[in-house]
Image 1 (cartoon, helix red, strand yellow):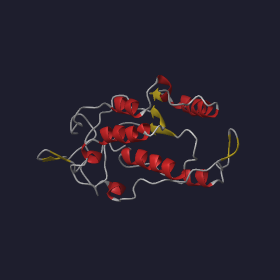
Image 2 (spheres, one colour):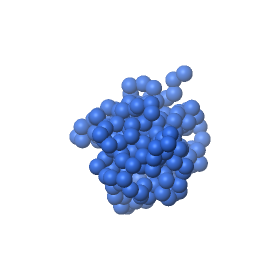
Image 3 (cartoon, one colour):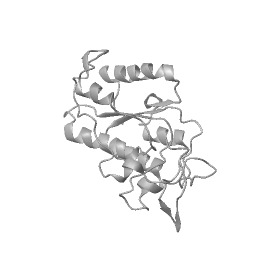
Image 4 (spheres, helix red, strand yellow):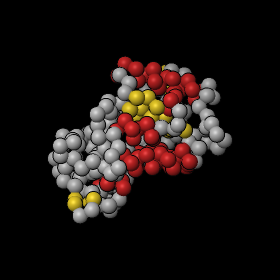
Length: 210
């Protein structure tokens, strides 16, 4: 994330296509259960992705839901698995400075996930290294008469209103139920978490309960 950066541009978030689907839905990523196909479009594309910049996950959730609507198979349970290493603290600069995507990056993530969940999509959420992170408004966001100049720390940042800790936001993004939210796992447990989620899905245990 961009927790130690000073005021500046939103980087690629200034582009309207900043959030996009790496690879459309397919089943070519594995040769068999538990065996990844490293030459598949998904794996070869994923290996080219580099980290960096700030964190703005609402658009990613929007893009995931739109892909399920567009290419998801009819009659199947739609699922999003979402992992973040902390609080959202950036937003798309092509939107108005008063847009909630910029003034409330974490809160908008919760709202975006709510749209998917209202359409019966199950959302698994993993709060990885999010302990102690606060949700701040993005640089350039306008809150009242003030334009945000800093982000990323309680000393300099402008906290979202209402205040929303990163862990709380990630929990709210998940579907209701303890099995859908993984709070602060250690690095060695991530593989097991994804295996558990995959097991739930293949076993048909991941279901909306009315």
